[in-house]
Image 1: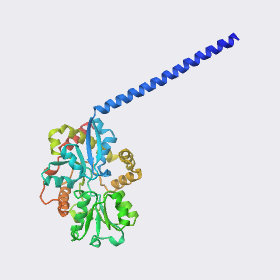
Image 2 (image 1 turned 90 degrees about the vertical axis):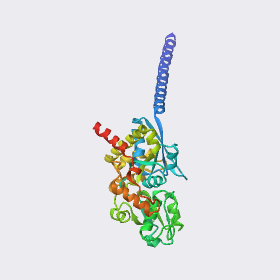
Image 3 (image 1 turned 180 degrees about the vertical axis):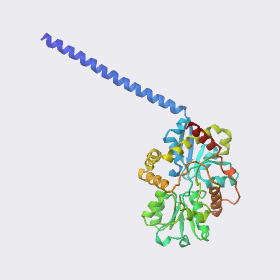
Image 4 (image 1 turned 135 degrees about the horizontal axis):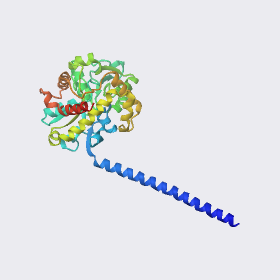
Length: 359
């Protein structure tokens, strides 16, 4: 009996020791995890926050999103917060100093500079016009067929979709707002507006949007990625529409910050050039809440096939002149801006120089 009791005591002690070891191990793992999280928090707190505004989250500003998801902003000591400004102009936040960068089209830089508000494009992310003017059905397959009808063109009268619609209409010989009504509707609302016959055409701002309209019987009237079609309207197949911009005030007050941000986005642009559409879609997905990977993948594949993306970040003189022509056709500007008024690519020069020196 004593042997049994002794054995029982030994086993009890042994289990107690093992339990203690397990508890100690668990506590140690919890402590290590907490310490790791604390270090991560400290690292994030040490990064300088920058705000990047946008009217809409769009694939064609990929280098900005990829700079965050690939960790390139972090390498430069930055942490980007993307703010989608609904019902307002995302450029205004940069001019007021509430944001550092804005994702918009060249028309914003053209119109703001004509008003005397210093605004610069520091990087262009596309080299072709990725928009399409799409008729609701075969009945509306030409611009002439839209006379007396309504065209939906994005969210803002200062936005590129609106300018594109007006330029296409005015080029055809009709007069926008007189012969054809150009209205503001967000692209997710296009299908319902077409179904109710509220609109007879719309500007698709990305390949996925154009695909969805085509799936419902839509007909492409003007394809911005078709070199011959767009060249007839704006005189060039090159058009560096999508851009990353900042204010003259920030360039003057904190050029080091601007340089760090451009460095990060240039690295992302370089990565993007050799990445597969699948890789690009996967890395962008975390920043597209509610978006399906199918949509991003479709846009990425279209982008590669039609050579829409700009992998250098620079503009071309013909692309700039095309931008001026289109915005004059749309009535957005009247003057003769110079490239120096619109672009500051010195930060881009420095970024590429640093990349080349590392290779």
